[in-house]
Amino acid sequence: MDIQHLVDRLEDLIDEGRHLPFSKFTMIDEERALEIIDQMRISIPEEIEKATRILAQRDRVLAQANEEAARIIQNARAKGEELLTEDVNVQAAQNMAANIIEQANQEAQRIKAEADQYILNVLTKLEQTLQVNLNTVRNGINTVRQPNTTLTPTVTTTPSVTDDVTSGYSAPVQVAQEQPVTTSQNRVPGISLRRNQKDTE
Image 1: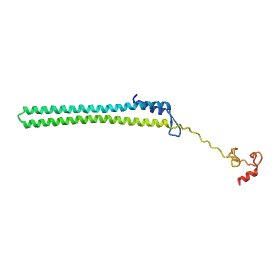
Image 2 (image 1 turned 180 degrees about the vertical axis):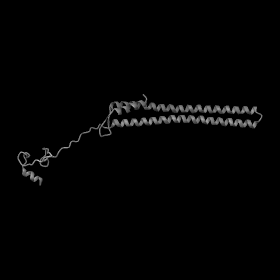
Image 3 (image 1 turned 120 degrees about the vertical axis):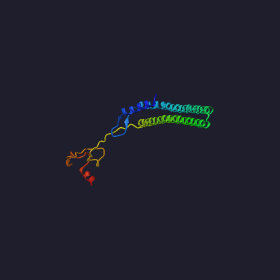
Image 4 (image 1 turned 90 degrees about the vertical axis):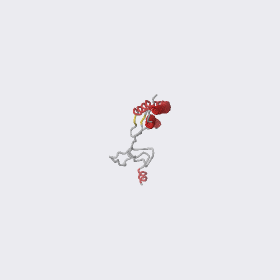
């Protein structure tokens, strides 16, 4: 499967995930993500093989360019020799032959340069594509490996009057009203008022 298609699938999976509030984490289907990553591991060697084929193609293109350049030079020399035999003015014929050979050399260099530039453009584009895909794969792997984060709401409780007196017993206090502890109904069971006064000291 094409690596670009797998990258698109991984991006869609991340976009479909549920973003956790107040965090940078996103919950996604781990099984689907790992499946896509496994398919990427299979597809990446195919992309490398494609790059190898392009390099082999470069060698073929350069070989063809060299053959074409050699043919042009050979034809130019043949044309120069022909002019030398036909033209009475030997010097003029030699100059013309030299010009033809020079033009042939320039044409051969141009063909080689164009072949190199073509291969360079193809390999550069492939390198950029592989780099983008590699970054996306790494981000997907990091997203899958991040632990699930559960947000627990913070509950604030009002301190108890008897927290400093006894443990295991908590009585909420209303801030708006202050209840005097004067009667036996308001006392904490098992604790006398005298003990409370001593503790507060």
